[in-house]
Picture (cartoon, rainbow, N blue to C red):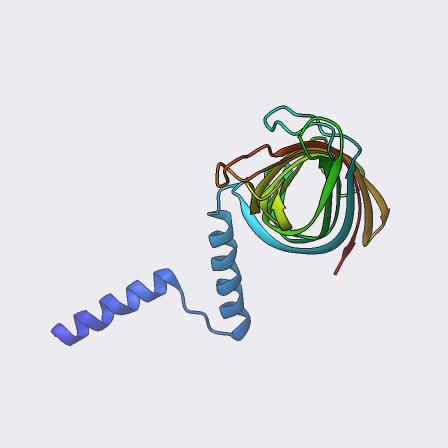
Length: 221
């Protein structure tokens, strides 16, 4: 009798929840489960996606604009490569994440930091992190943006002289405009406040503050 009651109880339980009798039934259950799982993700939750673009950029400042640094009347030119490898979706905005190499840098400045006879240095560097955020609606076409980057530069000789250092830190903050040329190509024009400093690592630390005009072209890889 107890086995009969157990069987009747199990039969009643499974008759209520139902059995997937066909492959289509099983697929329907699986798809419903996936749909419910995706619905459980909060809307607007940040999402990191792959987004590979490679760009070549040129930057030049005809004279320094000392705000933090003390070096005056300095010229600075840079040529580099930008690799954007990810985007972080933040609602209606996308935070672009990239890294840069400074392939060649050139600094020309007065030996005394103000005027008179001049000297120059060559440099190379790396910026492990650059962040770019659109200011206007991000349609993937044409928009204003702000960006910032941080890294290090290596001069071929101690900057500004033997009392300085070969290794210097660099940070910048900029604004610009993105022009869509084709589906896979874009042009950017912008301005960056660019700071170079050894952070007190040398006997002297005049640094260089520059207002860089930046032109770059990027292609989706």
